[in-house]
Length: 263
Image 1 (tube, helix red, strand yellow):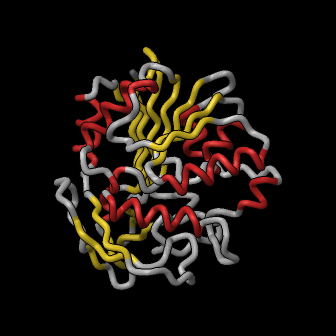
Image 2 (cartoon, helix red, strand yellow):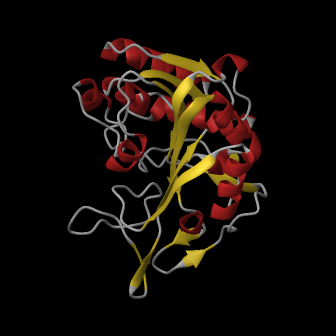
Image 3 (cartoon, one colour):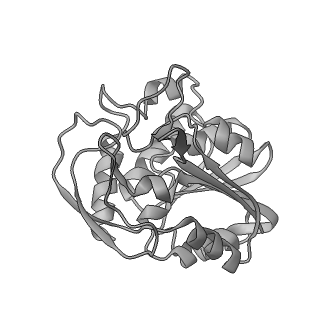
């Protein structure tokens, strides 16, 4: 946990502050840019007047865009640097929001049964050692009838180390800790940062759905997406239409999955 927190503290300092950043253009966000993608917006639906909890919110840009759409927002992240930056960004943007420093596997009791929607997107569960605890916490934060919306990298895509040539070097599921030395950041590969030792966890789609069901959630939607607006791992080249696809023979393999589950 401490090694992972050091990595995300560092990324929270860097993201949105370098010229080559591919994901976090803070100035355009402050000018009104909507950072949320159609996939999560469609699954969440109209948030006007709703209480929304954003898990693993990083430094808050997406959280604050849910607020721009009319939600009362709370963001949670385990990085104190990310939480501090999120609070500062909310002030700069003139948006009311609450940000909480906490481990999403052990959410504060004060968040229980307070939210109509819990959202987590892109690079979520691979950082979670206790999948059942994460799902139980998300379920406990929802009011009756509330929805968990999760959009994340597809476990099949996570196994892939390179596309040309195709190399897979990560397990498909099992939840066993995978130790890796990480350099740089996905947001700006040109940035040089110290090597960080991290631990990540592979979960199959079946393990994820089972954990949600065991937490008392009712699965309403499960999607597997072969055409996406972003490649969170930077392995793919966009097509002429701007969408990313992972070609496999004459077909395509999924890049993302999406889950909507009801309390």
